[in-house]
Amino acid sequence: MFWLKTVLTALQFLSALGVIGLVLIQHGKGADMGAAFGSGSSGSLFGASGSANFLSRTTAVLAGVFFLGTLALTFLGSYHGTESAGLLGSSAATAPVQAPLSAASGTAVSAPVAASSSSQDVPK
Image (cartoon, rainbow, N blue to C red; front, side):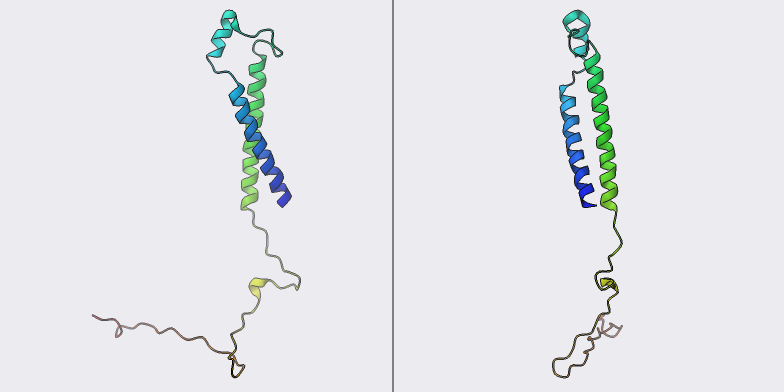
């Protein structure tokens, strides 16, 4: 289970960096007005609007990967497995508790009983 959390954390980190980078590369809405008057890059690799579509689709895919990675890490972080029985087959939580022994006699010593407060002990 530990290796899965490590892989998901690395995927989460890389998708977050990818989303940040792609958002910073993309042009704002105002850049489209300049392209409409001829100052755009219509001879680019993706065409006049192809790069915007490619970048926005890639950003959407990486955002989806980031979202799913977040859900998976949350699910794995909240998962608590069953308690192991250990090598001897008994759980540590069900092991009997032994009272401390007296140094002189070797017998079990009882714990002191706390005094209960009554109405006589409370000053008025």
